[in-house]
Length: 46
Image (cartoon, rainbow, N blue to C red):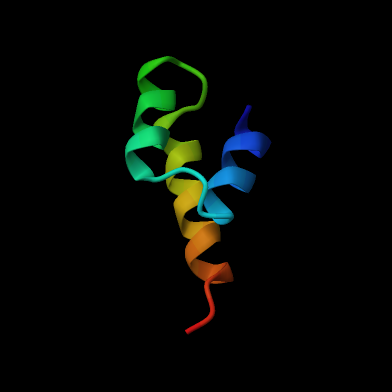
């Protein structure tokens, strides 16, 4: 599930609130959520 959510977040298909829902449902941990967000920020061209 982590890889799928990371791919979707990085591609812009889901937002932070969707990741928070995934944490609430136990699909990913809070740490994994933060990892997804950090990785996506690094991949965003500025």
